[in-house]
Image (cartoon, rainbow, N blue to C red):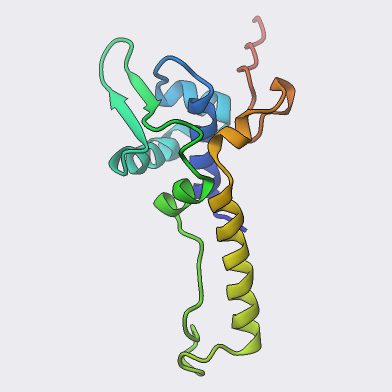
Length: 145
């Protein structure tokens, strides 16, 4: 339904929305179980779109730039990998008249956009802590060696 990149972006945003202090790529990657190299590219996209702010140096890291109740799932997804819509036949066979298959696919994509557009990041984090979506909250402690 959504790409791995979109899921990783949502994991990072949900995690950041639940934090008060800036979080580094390594901290976010550990909790969200996203490879740190991949996460760095995702965070760069989110930073360019001004969804997160980045601060360098000691006590630096990423913070959510918008309030969680003002940021929708659709906005996050559209930054990294927009929902694919069909405005004309992708095979070039039907022009602007969609065949039944592509009409159904476009209707499904529209429903996804509507649902994601109506769901804020706050909606995803305002649940009991043990049911937090997309990542482990709080970070599981590392076993003693």
